[in-house]
Structure formats: C-alpha cells, structure tokens
Image (tube, rainbow, N blue to C red):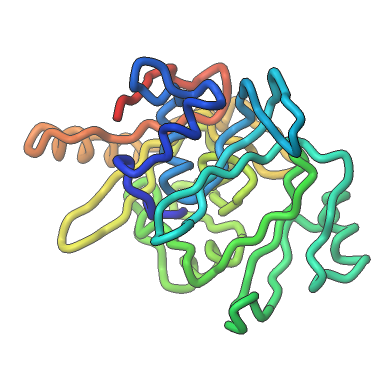
Length: 263
C-alpha cells in the first residue's frame, strides 16, 4: 500500500483538462483512481481525448495515468498507453524478463543502483495491460498495520513489501501489486486495511478486489468474515465521533462506485 504522497490541491489540472478529465473545475475520476494518483500508483485504463505526441494528434486513446515528482516537487502527469513491444530494464536478464512477461513469475526482487547512484531494492512486475515493466522501491512501500482488524506482524509486513502473500487469522490473503489501481490482490472481494498513525487509525475499505494471478474468485470470496464485520462496525463508530470520508476503493465494473470528487 502507498500512502498519499501528492496533495490534491496540487493536481496538474490543466494537463488533466487537456485529456478530457476535468469538467467545470471538477476532476472526472472515480475515487479509487484519484486515490491511486495521489498515492503514486497508476489508474485503471481510462478513455483519454485530444492527445499530442511528436507533433501527432490523437483524438482518443485508452491509457493509464500516474503522477511523478517534477520541478520543485510538483506533480507531473504521466500517460501509459498499451505498447506494442515491452522494454525490460537493463538489470533483468533475458530469462527473468521472459518469466515476468509469461507469468511464470509474478514479481522479482532486485538490488539495483539508480540514476543518482543510490542503492535500493526494488520489486519488479509486468503490467499486461500496458506491456510495461513496473518498478516499486520497497523502502517507500508501506504495509498495512491491520487487515480486517487483525494486526500484521513485522514478518508479515516485510513479506507484503516484498510482494508475497500474507494471510491473517480469518483466512483473508492479500498481496501487494503495482499493476492495478488498488495496489493489492486478495482472495476476498472485500476487506478493510488499517494504518495506525499518531495514536489514531485510518481505514481503507476495498471492494471488488482482483484475484491472485492464475486464480478466480468463487462464492467463498464474497463471504464477509466476522473480523471484517467487527472492523466495519469500529469504522462506523469512528465516523460518528469524528465525521470523515472513508475511502471506498472498488476494483471492477460490477462493484465500482461512480462517485466523483471535486477539487
């Protein structure tokens, strides 16, 4: 999970408007896509309009978008269409890149030296929707403190940041991924992740979560555990004491909310 690293007030509205994602001063993104942007993740595939590239005008294009830190730390818009060919990072061997592209490996950990000469460990995945390799700095990745109210041990948090499956007491399994806007896969269609900070707690409510690679959700996936229900009740009680929006992160068309968020 990535906490928000960008401020909504600093969104590049002119750039978003230029590709048809702002109307009457409102950002026309679903809540989960906006959260993905502010957290440094990619959105789902979006229909974009009026793009220009190398003096070529493109009337419409389906692509994912994301934000990166630009000049003075201000967010800059990145567009990720589907590429005809993938280009693997130089630090991956031919066998490693092929394993990711074919799905033989879901992710790989690599120790690299970045362009600034800094050593870091990254988690590498392959996004089949855009034909791109994705790189996540494990040090900057934040694991949830709880899943459905069940605390994660330091070992479980470390596994999560390494892209490994983590299971809690109620049977819920979860795994980090940069390939979808929610940043997770799970064996449940719904779960509640919690992050503890400064003595408080923040809840993230996920619905329509994508299944693990090579697996499909079944009837059991939609069952809500008692731990989930108990955590949901605590979340509602917190809202009653200190009213605040609880982010509803949806993962597929059948369960996704269509709410819009203004500036």
